Amino acid sequence: MCRVHSLILACLFCLAAPFAAQAAGSEITVFNPSGVRGNGQFVDELLKEAMLSQGIAKPRLAGNFPKARMETVAVVKDAFMEINALFYDRGWTDGLPIVPPTPELVADMLRGADLSPDFPLGTLAPMMGGATIEKIAVNAVMAGCEPKHMPVLTAAVDAVMRDEFDLRGWSTTTNPDAGLLIISGPIVKDLDINDGTNSFGRGWKSNATLSRAFHLILQNIGGSWPGVTDMSTMGQPGEYVMLFAENAKANPWLPFHTAFGLPEHANVVTVAAVEGYSGILGIGQSREGYLKLVANWLKGHDRPYRNTMILVVAQDTASMLAQEGWTREKIVSFIMDHAKVPLREFKEQFIDTNMAKNGVPTWVFQEKDMDRLVSKPFMDNLLVIVAGGTGEKSMILPCWTAGKPVSAKIRLPGNWGELIK
Image (cartoon, rainbow, N blue to C red; front, top):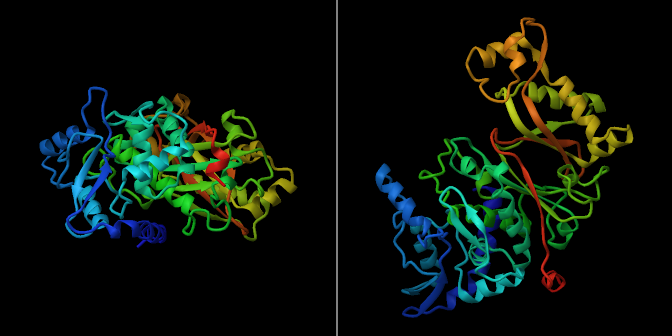
């Protein structure tokens, strides 16, 4: 089992303790996490129709539930286990145990938003379920979040609904992309998000539950169901948890989110669809040597075009780069200049195979000099961020080729001081 998954299990079984008191023959009331369309139809009803037309049998109880905000379930033996089994059979979980969204827990979660529970943020593709504050809170409870996590989740929902993200395309693609959350600003400390050693790893509640809630929101409210609407050929573990934070203390440059035109001291969540990540080992390298390693990684890439790449620079490497006068702009320029191959190689791999359909400049197809250097891949953006602990082991994350990463300011409610106390 994945280390992050083990952490989630431990947290959730602790949260399950109160439900053990539910005696056999009693009842438990829970909220419905499924999205509702503008016409009042639950997205699960459409998903069930799609399953029937495609001959898909799982989830076993898809669409089989009272069409209401809440329902009362009779407890036979164990409320926690029975609600988990029921929600799993309906397609409402990610396969790991969830916290049953009782009225008491949902009401507590709503303290993290100073908007009405029925306030609509918008609709989530692909099935266009309405993302109300209450629906977000229900899924946040299920993931094990706290009320103080709500502002991040509402901002992340706002980000993915923007056209440039292309949520419909991403949530239905065959590509193995997971939704990555990058948190930057003072809120990283407020929420005790790990921005240092083991940034992508286990052991931090905010990192694990925030990302998990985000994916449950897309699954349940938006209707991105594996094998039904989410057609990822392979998928990836990042669909459970994929989040890290900028290490502001170790960052020698302006905050990451300023690249998106946002104020330096803002609290920001950036959402990107990424295929995964690969390590870049900078030990023993000069600063140019390190940057050439990144360029060489790009030259070995399997796509002729990539909208965005994210380079996560380890703090020791970032410090040494900055000491030698390397700015973010200089780093990006150097890498782009060195991530090039002769046209003959690019042609053989991408043009002759008809892969270079989108994003490749037209002059490449008209060029006759086979020795001319061309970018591999052509890129719109190379984003540079500092994260992680000590050491010189950086990472690079290729983003989905269609949509773009989107940043959104995190709006804090009036009771923020109370929430983080």
